[in-house]
Image (cartoon, rainbow, N blue to C red; front, side, top):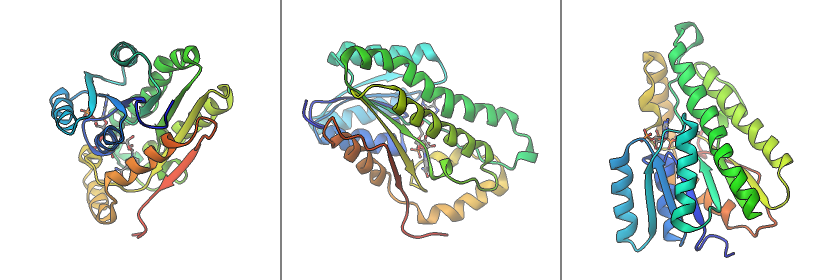
Length: 244
Ligand code: NDP
């Protein structure tokens, strides 16, 4: 199996930001990409762009909080291309706020998308990868998986969880399946648009001035996929050189 070319890569949260940049880059490098997210029209526009460049792509609407959607997404990927080599659990939300704002619905949303969404991707894809005796999970965490900051307690908790789940999975699966955690620092995307708390939104506006392009994270993902099958890039932190 070549390293990226011809690999079948299923990407959640491919309708914007890091997922979109990753789909474009991997398709340009010859991967067959399957794009999932809720905004189907955005996925279809991206698919047209990839096809115009000569790439191979399929799209399916997907809500990662629903296990049946995650399973349908992986089954569809396998039906379309005969196998699934890489699952990128990238979908995420980040409505930051101080805990005493008691935005319980937003806490639950982060837990549902950022933790359950990753677990659903694993549940949907692990049996297939075990049958194939090969595969790779790439889970997108954050620098918030290593340190907590004000307004980000719940978001960081979800990303610590993604890191713990990824490390546990890596330890448990046998040598045929690779597990990679990618931890971005601040990156250009639509992620901050879900912040409803005024103070957190204002702080994030400052912080985002140093954001790196989403393609920087896509290149890290491509690097992890591109290694030989016996090399697992288990953790990568990619952040702006500048700090705030
Ligand atoms: P974006 O908001 O641009 O992209 C998030 C993606 O997740 C969108 O495609 C969105 O698609 C999708 N998504 C959200 N909820 C769901 C859902 N329930 N089911 C399926 N898809 C969903 O942000 P980023 O590209 O920045 O985010 C990608 C990942 O990177 C996230 O996990 C984020 O936490 C992480 N990250 C980002 C950083 C940054 O600074 N940008 C830093 C550290 C980590 P749709 O709305 O169409 O469903």
